[in-house]
Image (cartoon, rainbow, N blue to C red; front, side, top):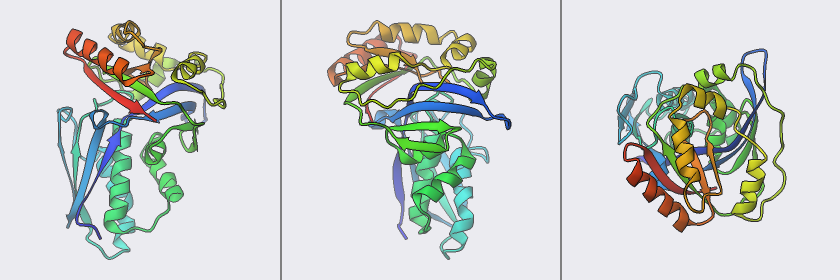
Length: 292
């Protein structure tokens, strides 16, 4: 058993997100192309060490107001695996630490990514023999985004999030992420969608450049963008500011918001845009990252 483990929990960005219907149990049917940040500046970090009982400590620039109680997904992930740990004969608990860099309730899967990182770390720490598919099925109990966050690379999501397939190979891209400091509850955004579902548009062709990817994405949509902008008009100037940056190929809301992304072909253009935004809007959270 390891003495301690640490893992990045990267931001999950929905390049498109189609809400195609609603099931009888209330869950929505989705179709989404997801990529993940490849920079620590756009990632949380989860660390675990052996302990007699479960505990969670949270720190970092976005830790304020985030509960370390029973509703935290990192702690819930540990509780999900703990019964399997008891069968291994190892310590019953773990001391978990979350360094929070990503804004809370911001449409980039921070809580889900944190839970996925905790599951990976605890599986190794406790020596639990569970394969990736079984872990993914169990993780769906924590939220629809947790299985794709366990995969941690570009993927196509369908169903309620339980079906995760590798995406066609994508070109090198850079994203500028910007959030105006507004938290949006996913359930509120879905409620505001009010049954206005769109048709599926499968993503099957391999784009040969960032510009080609942007063309394919413009033919698709984020069905949650309109209700999110209705609930949080602060999103509008973020989208406008991203679109105004030189080299921005596409600007769109990620997930249920309020984080928006600008798509760029080069690191230089993305870095320049991020510096412009941070200077013009010092209260916004802004990060630059390669994505894949």
